[in-house]
Amino acid sequence: MILKHQDQLVRRHHHTEIVFQLPVSLALLLSILRLNTQTAEAQSANINVNNPQIWTNAEQNLKIQFSYQPQKPILDQPTELTFVAQNLKTGDYLKNLTANILVTHYSSGQFSNFRFSNITVPDGRFSVKYRFQDTGIFEIITRISAKEIAALAAFKVIVPLQPSPA
Image (cartoon, rainbow, N blue to C red):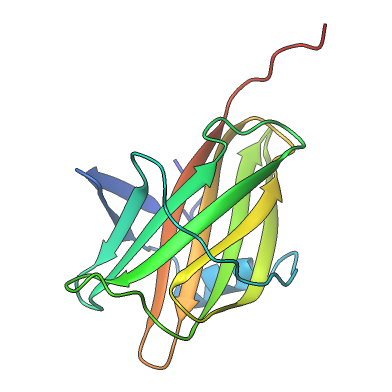
């Protein structure tokens, strides 16, 4: 589940591919991405986990892989969110992209959002560090764009309950 309101994104899983139906307008989703603006510089990123989350768009010949470290995020500790954007058919990294990332969470009837904006991505690989402040399921929405590409992809991060301090 991403959102529980009328502007809900619907997700359907088929193997490792995630297909999104967007009943809300792209303008509304982009306005959400404008919340909590913060810039971040791209860092070289390699997917080095066994099961990255994968989003594909056959129409744009695009694949985005997402992973995060640590795989069990710890509250108030940095978690690295890593993305790799590739040509779906050749596997080549996409060049000269701009990325925006929205971290969103619904808890106790409240939405929280945090945005990384205007990330320069010269070689298709980028990452940011984020500190989760709550447990639960977080949606990570990324928008990548270039001269001939504009795509949204969404992924999830599960932040488990934390052990009580001794």
